[in-house]
Length: 224
Image (cartoon, rainbow, N blue to C red; front, side, top):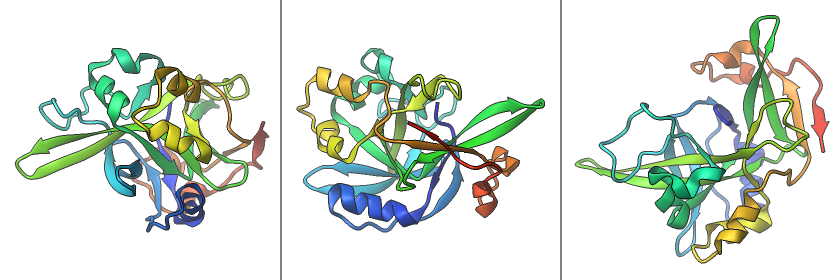
């Protein structure tokens, strides 16, 4: 599951520079919720970083809707889903984020937990994108792919976003990559240490977008 995330310009700009050799303008966005825009990395005759709606709108659909949950895509059913089959075959992308939130129950309250890379650099999440056409133009949208949580993270949540190493990006985005290689990239596992910490419950309201969303309540636990 990945239902809320953060995009922090620095050091995310540095991560993208190291990963693809390009310096992009990244806008800091805190407590990003589904249907809001996120930066999406693609390779089509060169690298590009484009803002897209975080809730996939299939090109064949009637238009934007929240009737079906389309902000996460399960890795196990991509080839069986009408909405995801074509994007998985030819419209894969990478969604760079600084961290994401999950929740646990604490004294009857929803306690948010913030997940970041151990080194604080950012995650490169596997995703899919599509373009829905209207009279006003194309609406670009995306989904984040999730997989079963590895044993180290299963106590927090049974699903995690698929994390890619910088060295995996070309393989993931290449339309010629065989199915077995893509399946390997989506296997449950950790490409590196993850830091988990409790943060302020201000995160629970998606309308809150200020620095309080980063307020740590506990020291980070490093998951290896």
